[in-house]
Length: 550
Figure 1 (cartoon, rainbow, N blue to C red):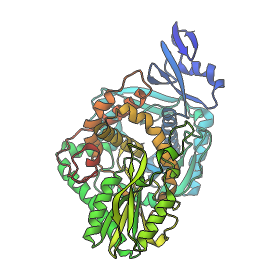
Figure 2: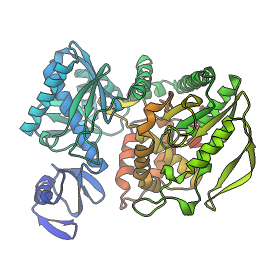
Figure 3: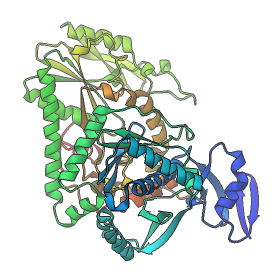
Figure 4: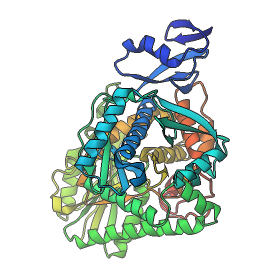
């Protein structure tokens, strides 16, 4: 018999009992389907047999559960697409990036992705869901997997696994349709009740629920500016044969890293120069408003943009919106009673608008300084007066929200959205979430500049993400320009910095599951040195050694 602690219950089960059978006993106590279990700090799929330990059930309300749902739904979509199009007519299907609360998919071959085609694929997916087909898992040797990928023309996976140190690979299949996936799956297709397909641009979006509402599909809202930025990066990766981790590892193994760094940095500098030229051409622009999610490299970008603005004949002045925080005692609090520093109510919006309006009128203004140690706003004789060629470069999470700068004419503002939108995927069916790249950046910087552990960074990350969802992402399409700060090589560099931090997270804490996932993810990359990275690189904001004041 096996002894399992479930909450306050201690239950005994015969050897050979599966977690699915245990979950079935307890499912009535959960609003949403149990998708995985966590036993002794380790995630397991429901087909696994029970073992001794403390058990916790995982639904799609938690990140591991939602990730398993998304992964499984992707396999379901691919099986249905191949069935409708005919496998012999499919050249390639790429699950490219996240857009509009879904995954953008590009399907190439001797078929047309129109509304009729997508209706057929959706109907086939629904048929498979109703049949509750088991999602089967088998383990094969890495050498056999490489041969299998080659035979099935999955060359992206073949490249990837030539660099894998593990001896075996887990393959997943639905009714004979087999593929490799990075992470866990749900037990059968019957769990995948909520999805939709929406035709968009040159492909379609696989729309799936979110953790907040696992039984509801979000409305698909096109994000054309964000899509254009992501598509531009994807095209660059395709044109240079750098779409996947396997391709990046090929470049590193061939000794091409130094050249790749130069090309990527040149590409970013070119983009920054183009944005500066746009600002200079807009004669009415006096306020450059920059916003983006955590660890996007906003500070380095602001400095480099200011240099390009100077090169264009303007005189930029940095303004930190954080200096307009209200005194800490007057700050709003969140539902847990903590200060809600993400809220726009933390800012003295009235004073900000008075000062900016006065500056625009040519008046001399004393700017505030926020003393974060004391939690009060102070004035230290920092006066500013704008001339004909002066321009303010303002950075803050609310800069794209017109509520912050309501008194300023729209023509006086040039809005920029910046984010690390990685163009790299593990392979054509396993995407890298942009949040993973930003979280890794954040852990490295927090450890270096604040002495924070990776455990602390992981613990507070959901709160950071909630603030982004509320205060940044709803306004990103308001931007006049978007800048992608992701560097295609950066995870190979960050690996050496973040792995020791992740290994330092104890196995018995809640953050261990996320740490283990990230370590497994980083294992796909060949690590490289940071010595060839320029001193003004955005990556230097996180690893150190920048020549800029970041």
